[in-house]
Length: 332
Ligand code: CP
Ligand code: NVA
Image 1 (tube, rainbow, N blue to C red):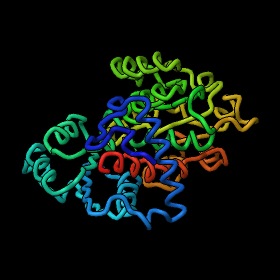
Image 2 (cartoon, protein in one colour):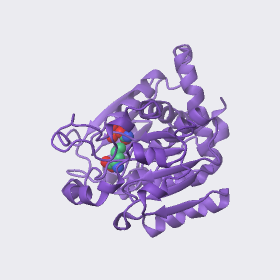
Image 3 (spheres, rainbow, N blue to C red):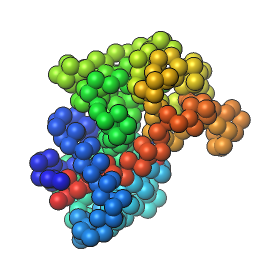
């Protein structure tokens, strides 16, 4: 494991496009190695973050990103402090710039989750230590590193595969997937209603990477036809955090876009085991949440979510290995 080859020492990660292709692929391979190392218990012999203090500044709730970061840092002998919206003055009684300068004097790195992307940019500008984006309204880069790890572990490769994203074609996860797939040569189809098509500038950014890497990126509004040939069918919630007031409207718009068994069959890859299902989670796949107790499954049917080809919990675990890879690359 040669961390210096990644050339990320002292740097954070705000969006995937801040990296080059080799760095994205290198972080994925590093995460695969760190997963093996943890399962072998080798991290206990040689922890790599001894004496390092990380803080998590979160304006939105989280299960995976928060826990993945805390466990990743503790695995390597470091310490992680969670600072929720109610815990600190951040952006309320104190400007982002001032909080950033204070946190940067005490911590070795900051993982942020919140609303406008400009907040994490300001944090990075003033903190003087690496800042990592654990989700903003626009981007979710660490999620996509875990997705790529999961795809590589399953298929043994990335380049040349086809991923179909079905749902809100302009949310943070879809934006990052478009750029991430294009950077590693995965063909991507963004299947969404016209009202939720990707923003021009995000599409142009992703297309520039796709052209360089010989992969395709298309936008399609037909959910059944669009998935033909897909090796990965991916979806996310229909209303992201901060968009709660749009929930009913999204339900109507995205109803035809639910990932169900018929859609998985339409890939043409189900019978030959050449397709998996991914979801960043949390997922509305049954009645067992406060939001779905009356309506049931939304973006994915329970049958697909629970099927053997669904790799969503491998994907969730890989959040820990990829976030660890990113923090180690920045701090060692
Ligand atoms: N996928 C993801 O970011 O999950 P959390 O919101 O639980 O962190
Ligand atoms: N698009 C979702 C992702 C959650 C991990 C959201 O922002 O709420």
